[in-house]
Every structure is written in structure tokens, then in C-alpha cells.
Length: 318
Ligand code: CP
Image (spheres, rainbow, N blue to C red):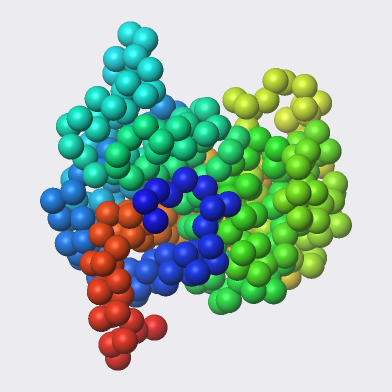
């Protein structure tokens, strides 16, 4: 892999390799222990949209691999004077980093950068399009909690149309053999549902008792034009993952949410906080591990393969 741009581009073997690396990081590294897989390398976090989880977990991932990070915030940069995305990225490239992690509101901007720059690009979320490391960390969280994803039934609930997380989840989880149902208001289901080869329903009650996993999505007010849902309270009433709806789930079913959570809208606070059934904070923890795997695979694949071979065959491997 030269870049990590979209879950749609990943093969099942590539996904399984990254999940295996993440699993070894989880089980073989002690808290705070570092590995020199990015020693001497610099990763730029180029974020044009706000982020709590993704940006900080990429920073921590680089530090745990003994690399250096350089964080860029568009709000305090020369973007405010009119500099373009491409000029900004080319100027950062001129300072000699090895990889750029980019988040941007324009779908396709990471692909554009991958064509004009000579370093690795990681997509940290581009518009409605994809958020592939989120898809990977969700798959990793499900696998760690429930075992092999093949045959698992997964419900993605909420604002599917505006969700880059849903798209990346669908691509990754389907390649791992899950069956996916998407559920939400008809106005928030994507027009390409058929090409995504997922089932869909319009009421959560139609699916909740059948599934192993529910991924509740944030309602993305910033990407709507205000016309798709009558009101947030009506949305919460019909599609929210309320306490009574969560009671329909099987005993061992788990609940994911990519964050940030709109408490009381797409998910009730009691449901979001209902650990261990809610694995929302496990997702955040796992985000560091899968981002370590992605960065190591891009910047030092031989080093990662050697470490995995050593750790994966030793008697302590899980
Ligand atoms: N899940 C996610 O992308 O969260 P942030 O926007 O906080 O990075």
C-alpha cells in the first residue's frame, strides 16, 4: 500500500493483515510501551475539519511508533489568507515529512493529494465519502468482542446518507463476511443502497432483535440542508436507540457509535453508557492501535512484517 484512501480499495487480505497487526499491538505491547517502526519519520496531521478522536489517536499512534508528528489546524494557517489545499500540502511536503493524514469536507480530496504529492496519504475523513480508519477500528472492535465477523448480522442505524463512516463500515464489514442492514428515515438512506448491496428497513424495531451489532450514527446536521427530517425530537422518537429499543437486542449484542454522540437524539445516554454492551470507548482505545497498523504498513511495511512474524509465532501470541 502506498496510500490509505478508501475502504472500497482494500482487499480482504489487506484488511485482515491490518486487523492482525492491531491485535498484536493490543496483546503484545504493555501500556505506554513504544516500538521504533516510525523512528526518523514525520507524519503531518492536515485537518481542515474539527476532530477529537481521529486527530489525537493519529498523534498517539505516531508517538507509540517513535515517529514525530506535526499538527496543522486550518483555522490558524495561511488557508485563511486564501492558500489552496494543494498549495498547502505541497508546502508541507517541502519540509520533508513521510506521510500526510488529511481530513477535509470535500469528498475525493485525499485522492487528489495522492496524485500531486510524492508521499503517503491517509484519508482521515473526506466529506460524505469515506472514513476508512474508522471502518477498520469498528471492524477491529467487533472482532475483539465477538470473534470472527463472518456471518455476523450488523445494523447501521441513522443518518446513512451523510455518513462517511457508514460507507467505510459497509465496505470493510462486507469483505469480512458480515451481513449488513441499514435503517433510517427514507430521506437519510443513500440513493446507492442497491449498489452497496445491503438490506434496508425503515424502523429499528424491524431489525434490532436479530442483530449481533448495532452501529448508531451521529445525525450530521452540518451536512444537511434542513429538509431531510421534520425535527430532531421526532427523529429521536422514531429512530433513536432508546432504552426500550435497546432492550430488544440479543443478550450478547454490542452497541457502537463513532462519536461524537448527540445524547438523547440518535442514542439515549443510558444506552451509550451501558458498558460492557456499549463499546464506544473501546472503539476510541482501538483507534490508536489500528492507526498504528496503517501508519506502520505505509511507512515501514518490512519492519512491521518482521515484528509481526516474531510476535505472532512466539508462545505469548493470542
Ligand atoms: N469518529 C470521529 O471521526 O471522531 P472525530 O470527528 O472526533 O475525529
